[in-house]
Length: 143
Image (cartoon, helix red, strand yellow):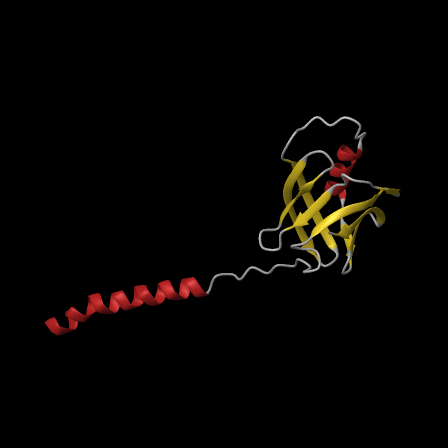
């Protein structure tokens, strides 16, 4: 009778190990809907609301792994995040720096506002176009 009870700690240890291994392998796998043409590339703004943009032009960078958005708004650095499904995108920019920039007009303010309202994109190998309610608002070139 004592031999039966000696195996209980060993059996319990095996159950705990098996449960631990199962919990490690059965977690949700995260799916990433990011377009590989969009991410891990720097994008340089060339046209905004129908006007050609000159240097220093805003830039964006989309990180594939973390869904982080970073870049330059024409005067200040920006950071934030994004989420994407098919051609639908949601951008959540936040300014990281607050430099006072003279002679920039409203470009920076309008650009940040445009990013937060963007709802879809068109992308090909060398260009990225942002849309708000199917209206083209910004065109970027791959840098």
